[in-house]
Image 1 (cartoon, rainbow, N blue to C red):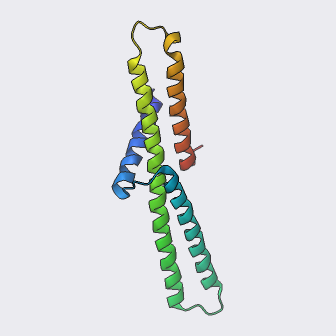
Image 2 (cartoon, one colour):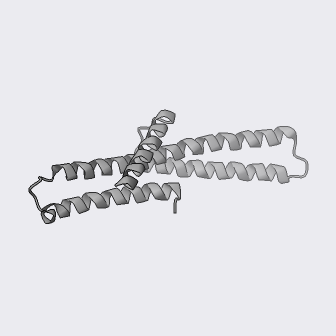
Image 3 (cartoon, rainbow, N blue to C red):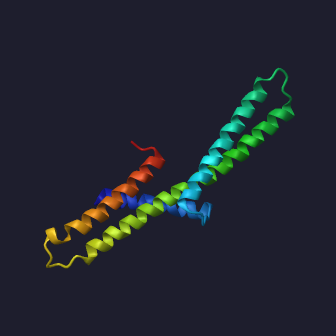
Length: 140
């Protein structure tokens, strides 16, 4: 229970940070696609910077332009990644709210076997959402 509260607190904090920095009304699928596009643009900008630095006689202006392109691409990637993180934390928060609601809806006189099926489904939803957040964070 304590670990779940920590995850929920963490998820709410990340969600709040994402909401403050990038208010997005896109769907999670659109946000993931945007993040992938931003990643592609970022790696291309880094490759261009490496190419400029590898040329025989790069000018300071060329290097600065390439550096600026990497910085812009990084900023876009960072914003897109925050949107994806906000989506994942929102999914976890929704799943946790569903489990808490299901637990609260179980009458005190019910046996555990009567409530088990719906509670297992809600708990599995929390686990799936937590796994999605974990995959985004790269935790082990």
